[in-house]
Length: 111
Length: 111
DNA sequence: AAAATTTATCGTAATATTGCAATAAAAAAA
DNA sequence: TTTTTTTATTGCAATATTACGATAAATTTT
View 1 (cartoon, helix red, strand yellow):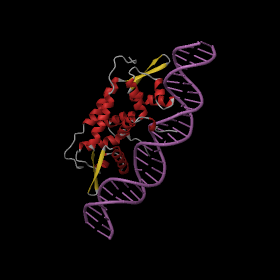
View 2 (cartoon, rainbow over the protein chains, first blue to last red):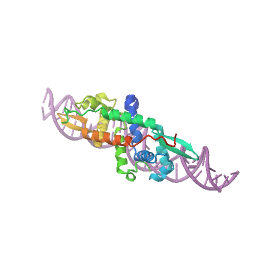
View 3 (cartoon, rainbow over the protein chains, first blue to last red):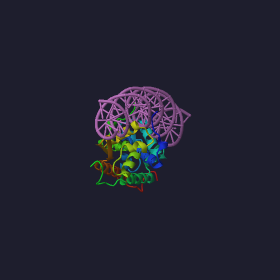
View 4 (cartoon, helix red, strand yellow):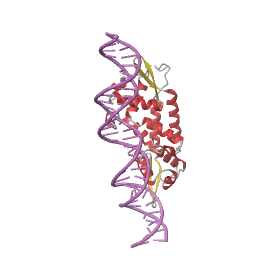
C-alpha cells in the first residue's frame, strides 16, 4: 500500500501533522516570509520573488490557503494575499503547546 | 519535473521546511508524544502503541533520528529512544522565531 | 551452539507531492 | 469589443513518501 493512515491517529496528532505539512516546503516558507515582510499583502510579486513558475506558486498559495494560514482578496484584476492572523496565532499556540509539553529530564535512559 | 528545488532557497528557509517535514506525519507526532509521556525512553513499545507494522515504525524512527529530534542508545538487545533535548530546544526556538516574526497589522490590505 | 527476541534494511507497491507548459477565467485597459 | 494583465486550473511527468513482507543483523536466553 502506502501513504497516510491518518484515520488511525488522534485528531490532535493529525492536526499537528497538517500544520507541519503546510510549512514543509521552502517555497511556502518563502511565501510566508515575504507576506510578513511586505505587510501590505502583495501577490503577483511572489512569482518574481520565487524561483518557480507561476502555476507552481499558485499551487503553493492554494495549499497555504487550504491550511488557513493565508487569505486572498480580489483587488482589481489581481489578488491580494496576506497572513490570516487568527489562524496564525492558533497554529503558533498549537506548536508552542507541543514543544512546551516536553520537560527536560535529568533521569532519561539515554544519559 | 517535480520535487524540491531546495537549492534555490535560503538555508533558513530549507531549515525551517525540514523541521516541519520531520513533524509532518501523525505517526511521528505520536512517537514524539509517547516518548515525552513515558519519559524513560521506550522503543519496541512504540510498535504496540502505533497502528503500524514494525518496519514502518522503524522507518519513522529513522527519519526522526535523521532530523535530530531523537536519539537511540543500545540497551541489551533492544534500543532505547528518547528526545534529544538540545535539538528539541533549538527547533522550538526556530519555530518560535518564525511565528513571532509576524506582527499583527491594523493596516493590512485584506481588511 | 541453537533458539528466541529485537531492531534495521531491502525490495516493492501504492499514493502524494512537486513542477511546469498549456490553457481557461476574470477583470482592466486599450 | 478586443487586447492585455493577472491568477487559477488542467494534464502530465518526475520524484518523494508511506507501508509492509521478507529477511538480515545483533544480542540474549536456553
